Amino acid sequence: MALSGIQIYKMLPQTNCKECGFPTCLAFAMKLAAKQVELALCPYVSAESQAQLSEAAAPPVRPITLQSNGYQVQAGNEVALFRHEKRFFSQPGLFVRVYDSEAVAAIQEKVTAVAQYSVDYVGIHLKMGGIAVQADGGDFAGAVTAVRAVSHLPLILIGDPDALKAGLEKLDDGKLLLAHATTANWQEMAALAKTHKAALAVQAANIDEMVDLAVKVKGAGVDDIVLSPAQRTLHGALTANTTARRMALKKTFRDLGYPILSFPGDTADPDMEVILAAQAIGKYGSFIVLDHFSPESAYPLLVLRENIYTDPQKPIQVLPGLYEINNPTPDSPLLVTTNFSITYFSVANEVESAGLPAWLLVCDAEGMSVLTAWAAGKFDAERIAKDVKRFNAPDKVAGKQIVLPGHVAVLSGELEEELPDWRIRVGPREAVDLPAFIKQAL
Ligand code: SF4
Image (tube, helix red, strand yellow):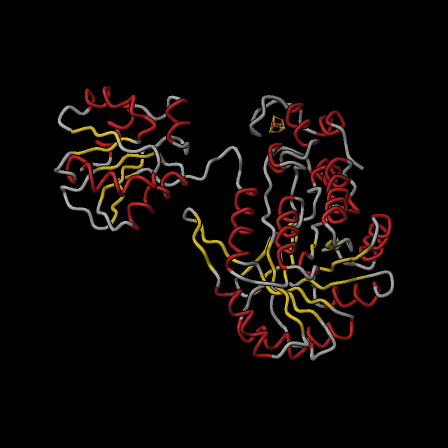
């Protein structure tokens, strides 16, 4: 049962020492009741109170990590229903499914492509999460062996208990997810999960049945449970996922406080599969199983995931500094921008791909884009001049030509005063126009 802030407060030391980062014990208690902080922030809670508070302090969505040979996919540990309330923490893992009815060569070709896929997005390496192996009347153990021969990504094994048993005998590494425990087989599946220390997905067509199964499986000794709603339509999957997560977060209903397994790949239409996967990324999917894999569909899904799971209060940043593009000489121009990642990569990519040598001064603007930083007073002539000197640009850029982003042309006069021996140029507003500007104007 969830404890109120006042109930939690009564179990805290009540000294208001502020070490937890809150002005009073009551303020900390209120945050704890709202699941927005960890109990561990207070070093003075007695062992007795700690035991009593464990229920209140336990994450409302159980953290579960699938892992294998250094690869891992973390799930759960979420505290917010909406990203803007705080942030989402555990990026869903994208799994690609193979079937044991497929030829070994086809399985390995698909798995290899998934395992090798890596794409750079604003300096972040995006990768797929793992492989799901589905029993489909073929040689399940053989399919598992074929997958493991070419990849050590985390696994989800899907099938009846006999098939899974055969597959599990071929594995001796990591923590995997077994699917599905149903009303018909949950005892056998729970026993398998316990023996192999695996997480277990429970599948049900409605929320009452899901709760009933989760309680039974937990009673059988499996703690790492994953919910797998049977709904496959956009509306059905959205409703099932949202209901489970809302109950877990808003009502602290522990029997639905688990990560969620989603199957966009169950649709026959590859386009709809991507749409369902995008919905699952946005709405509480933790492990997302796709049937089709291509860079064209993986990239937008991974970028979507990245954007939803970054902290909205902390822009993705690059380190301020003086960057070299295409081996610049002392006569190459000095371009200026801010340390918002997307801004940096837009400018750097345009100039680099045009083959033009340039220096790029990335100013510390607290991770904001050019216009936002200027409006917030974080990107002005004084700061640019300071960073020109801080990063020793005068020693490297003998030509002393500096290019301001067109959006902050208004700074050029002030910058002339700050850097009297530099020639200040106003560049284009958009990064895409930079190569033409450099070729024609500099
Ligand atoms: S650290 Fe503990 S005792 Fe100190 S103010 Fe926070 S909750 Fe109270």
